[in-house]
Amino acid sequence: MKKRMKKLFLMVTMLVAAVSANAQLEQGTFSIQPKAGATISWLSNMPSLNMGTTELDKTPTVGAILGAEAEYQLAEKFSVAAGINYAQQGCGWSDYKLEAGNNKAELKDAKIELGYVNVPITANYYLFKGFAVKAGVQFGFLTSAKLKGTITTEYNGAKSTTDLSGDDFKDQCKKLDVSIPVGISYEFKVPVVIDLRYNIGLLKVNKDSEAGHKDFKNNVIQLTVGYKLAL
Image (cartoon, rainbow, N blue to C red; front, side, top):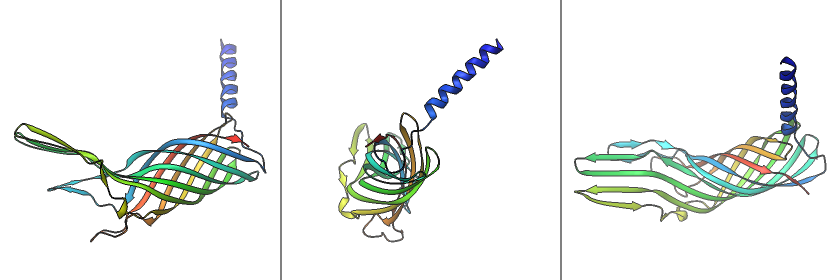
């Protein structure tokens, strides 16, 4: 029984090693990496939303990201990469519900959704084969800025719902965003790459600051999974 357990353990160990071994490219090679994933974002200095005497808490909002990245391996442990992606960013607020007798009001899924075409440029340092830390600069170009959410009211049995998705305020936002991406990535033998980044916004999103409020800046955590193809 012990021999069988040892053999099974050895087989599992070999399988894990085979899957997790990475395929980092050699010096002087190019690669391209299609990738997709999710974003968790918020706007710094964004005020809480007041509904009468109730203050709604700010919440991060979840979006999608899709793009590609090209990488050049300058040395065994150092590479540079440039990419392009489309990302959903923004911020949200907690839901609100009010009941007074037969009258009701409800605000759900209230958020600001910003769409950006981003161009990240990063320097990557491989601490060990397959595992890299990275930092650089990212330029973002605003494509959309919309208010999302629904307001449902019920008054004496009459119910109505208002969809806020058509409210566009792109003209109130700056078209260019600049951020600092920092993160880590790990490349498996497959070769699948898992990439985790935090993009720190440097420029304000809003053209004009509201009275009593500071400038709003993007903060984005993004997790992507990519497939690395040698060129």
